[in-house]
Amino acid sequence: MTAFILRRLMALPLVLLALSLAIVGLMQTLSPAERAAAFVTNENQLRNLEAIIREKGLDQPFHVQYWNWLREVLQGNLGFSKASNKPVIDTIIERFPATVELTLFSLLPILGFGIWLGTRAGLNKDRFIDQFTRVFTVVTNNIPTFVLGIILLVIFYGLLGVAPGPGQLSPENQVNLIINPVPRVTGMLSIDALLAGNWPVFWDVLHHMFLPVITLSTVITAGMIKVMRSSLIEVLSQDYVRTARAKGLPERTVNLKHARRNALIPVATIGGFVVLGLLSGALFTETIFAWPGIGSWGAETATRFDVPGLLGFALLSGILTVLANLAVDIIYALIDPRVRFD
Image (cartoon, rainbow, N blue to C red):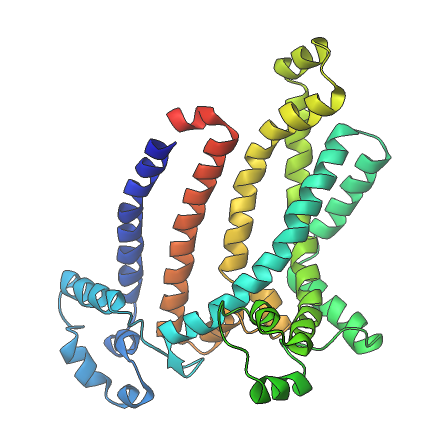
């Protein structure tokens, strides 16, 4: 297992190198002034881009520009974001925990409910639970995330008034947070408020998180259910499952220990990329609910043509993609030992 992980880790530098070359190559389609914005670290430098062009060699050959960009990135300088009015690296550090927080709370229903309902549907093919599951997945899988988010916001906030409005905190708890600051241990406000014993802030964040989590998990869970159901039905038809039954093993043992374990392999793939999509920023959901995560910032950088912000968002998404692929490979190896010898 260790050798398998090391082989995957050895490939990471090459993938990251290709990613960095692609980002710098993309920058070549921009004007020198637009490329210079990627090296700006404060608002004052925006007024003197010509000096940055000369200093960073943005009129030099590609390899010179690539080296200058890489050196700045390794020093933690990703430029100055107009969308957040602060350096890109500071924006990522500030906003990424909020996206992680939304991801963690969304994964609970996505993985738990998705695997459970997919398993029940696969084990009861063509029965009521399977028919219900197919209708549920068809309906929810075809609702765009932004449409569902708006519908939930209109009904539960606008009409019924049982859910809070957009944002992460209500105005009174924003004041509470100023008066009684919560130490930023994890960067996730709900967790930090819990650790600090600030219960009003903790419950308020959970209250505001309810509709975004429902929006994300409803749409994404449909795909998880479909993959789990299809995979389990296919596995149940395999010879080794029939052999296990012929040996007289209990049906629960055959279904859950033998069949479901192997059916989880495709689920591991989709699960890895579900996490990737959530961590990269559930752009529409965060924008609709004004959630202060990386996705809503990424959307704003696009609307304001914030070049450093866009490049920083692209770099973060690329790194997360590489790490997600590594995680999927490791999960594969844990579920199916045969993969370790590929």
